[in-house]
Length: 63
Image 1 (tube, helix red, strand yellow):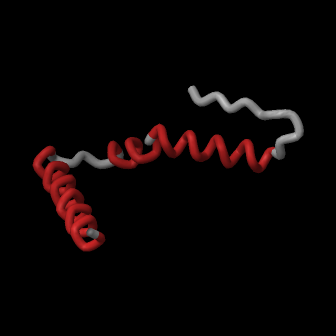
Image 2 (cartoon, one colour):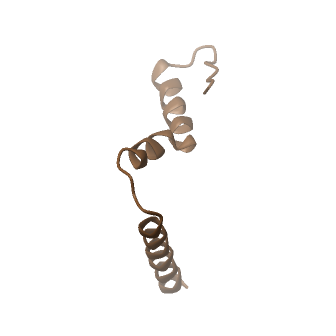
């Protein structure tokens, strides 16, 4: 459960923004979307490798 303490004089918009950030960090929505359709382990492994390769090429270009 996510708990957000609203400070005195803090606007509701700021508190809602903090809640959204915390909720995004937990990864609940990402996991929910991934569970909507079954994906084989080999395909998930393949996508993670593709992402890693892509990030590696980005890091090499920067350096």
